[in-house]
Image (cartoon, rainbow over all chains, first blue to last red; front, side, top):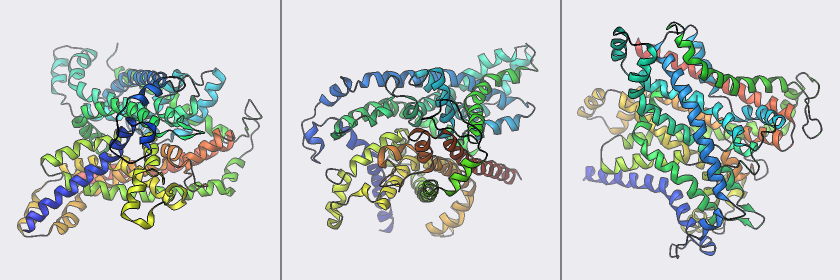
Length: 271
Length: 294
């Protein structure tokens, strides 16, 4: 009897956790498909419409431009950060470089610098260079946050790869660069892919830099949300539609790396 | 290419990025923090004023308020996140279809944009048509019509709620990783001896999780100290200044009042706090590792 009680109790708890996790997300999705007047009622009995999506992609909201900005900024950031970070991670993982501990500590500690500190000088610099409100500016500052993190993460993955086959290949006369290209890269690929997706998510969701450095041309999706706060009040149904556009690609990516994600995160943080 | 130099060549691209994007701005704002620079009046930085900007911080009520707000926010959100994450990890470590499902969806809050989380909760707590405000009002009629985000304490509570919702899942993954790495024998032996679940958790599991929990706590503290996104989209720092965190205050000084010297000084105070914590973090990790290998 007691065990049965515990069994059901555990399932009830799990169900409660799932509801707490899913409810805010589900509510946003529902609201995105409601007509404005339904959005302000709690009724679940409404006629679904795609009108909100049509509205946000049209003038004056032009969500399409923001999607494009977000995609370009996140993609280019990943394409620059991940290759550089992979090389550094390999070096940290395999070589006893002089001052290695200090360098690694330096990289790690930059992770703890608040974004406000970084953006302040960059704002002044970009203002002088006329780079405010450009994607280039966003990519540069995003690299600051993302690069140390990715080095840390990929190092965790490379540490987990045994060195045997590398050593065997080197004895056979292969150069270090060849070994990296032909042996390490394929084995580290899942880890590098996971880190890339992680890096993409971080950049995609980044808010503070974009809020400060963009005004009109280079606005990304998270900052775009703020523009639905108008004199007429908050336009929740449009915000929700924009929210769906922000979340769907990221949710798909997050679910794809779900398994590796857990491992990569804990490896990076605990080891 | 000489193999001997290769390790350094491999490090160079990443270091160029890190130096250019973090060390340089840090140095720049350090210098600026000793100058007078009102961006609305001067195009170029003004004269050096010594430690005036830092002294100003020490005496200004806005800064002191933000320090207090940040402290309350960090303590409550770290404590709640840790307790919830550890409990969830204990709940989720068993095998089962519902366990797996919950574990999978737990990744969603973490992947969601914090700015969007702020917007969603603002919507749900709207007293007139917010689903949570109405739901709570239906269950507890005395709370019907509560202006949730217009009350300083409640606004802070909801800010903490959004942060815990965002971070507890991630921290649960870290705790699950920790749980997976501790040996099960002692626990099983205790269970055979008839020890209660509570005793097993507090007497056997938690002591072994000390290292992981410490790391989780410090990481969460660092993230909480940077709290910014939801402050903008959920409360706007209000009502009044009741949810103005340090990061938000620095943002206001720098990009609303354009006082670059003062903002730089504030930014450096925030950095110093983070540095102290991160050095402590690395030290702690190293000593944990020593204990583990000893």
